[in-house]
Length: 147
Image 1: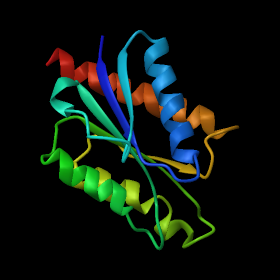
Image 2: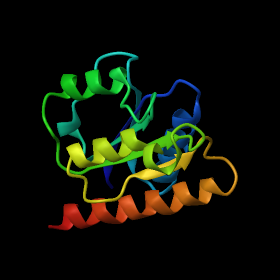
Image 3: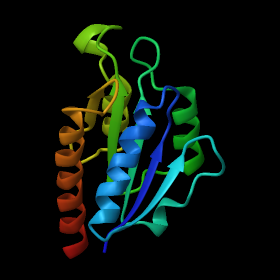
């Protein structure tokens, strides 16, 4: 069993929906999860988990929301095994800025897995993308645990 901390920031609800789908996939496969909305209270201790997932939306012109920056600061260190997912909108800034906050967070945490990038809502065909990404993250987590 893998212990997963899933933290997310969401204004429109898209990142929350993505986090809930991810949480459901892990839980359905018998893994322990804690879903934490960034800004809803103190940050959980990532050292109590095998992996931490961080979800963000992209703000303005490719910016990471201050709420997420504050969360990173509150954690105070770079835990191992961090995976990043994000929602965005190519309508504002095109491909160059699409989910740029997720890309920046993945680089900051030296994530070993490409960030998941969702155009607006994860519903419909993108739900399959979330599922495949989550399965890939699970495989990475299991590899780290067997080392």
